[in-house]
Amino acid sequence: EVQLVESGGGLVQPGGSLRLSCSASGFTFSSYAMHWVRQAPGKGLEYVSAISSNGGSTYYADSVKGRFTISRDNSKNTLYLQMSSLRAEDTAVYYCVRGGTAVAGTGLDYWGQGTLVTVSS
Amino acid sequence: QSALTQPASVSGSPGQSITISCTGTSSDVGGYNYVSWYQQHPGKAPKLMIYDVSNRPSGVSNRFSGSKSGNTASLTISGLQAEDEADYYCSSYTSSSTPYVFGTGTKVTVL
Image (cartoon, rainbow over all chains, first blue to last red; front, side, top):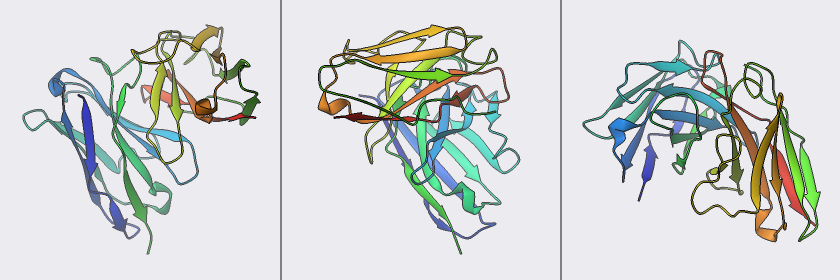
């Protein structure tokens, strides 16, 4: 069974940093692109970032470019999102999501339960 | 990257069919056959319902179907059931700096 479990969310002050982790199991992690998608309270889904299966290619939404860094450790079956210079508008539930074997195309087929990040003083 | 445009809400009676539209541009919906649809119940993670315009993942009811014409994709739910009441989001591959863009979301109400 595919499982994605996020951790690392919490309350952080504006300008602060936080690192999210996503532990994957039930599939060959190193064969799949992975993504982060967020959802602000009461709002829609927003695409945040993606990383290729070998970590060689990364992609970011304009809203987080230069502040967030996506990475992965295929030996630990873990995906990360390092967030810095956090703003109130980054407050959201962050979902770890499995894509296809390539970053582009096809659907995002497995989603974690999400971890809440709250940016507030 | 601008969000794809969906109607804010759609409603129907049990047993009826409803269709949700998702309008983009030639840089996303119209340019690629990589449109997906997601169902989200309150407090839950989204669930993939349709991928690559019209394909259903294993386990998804055949009451859900997808199509595309030009820059607009559509999700049709036939034989509407109470359990279909949820938010629905479309998504498309895009040639912009990020590989995907989501729609604005549609709340489906079963009357």
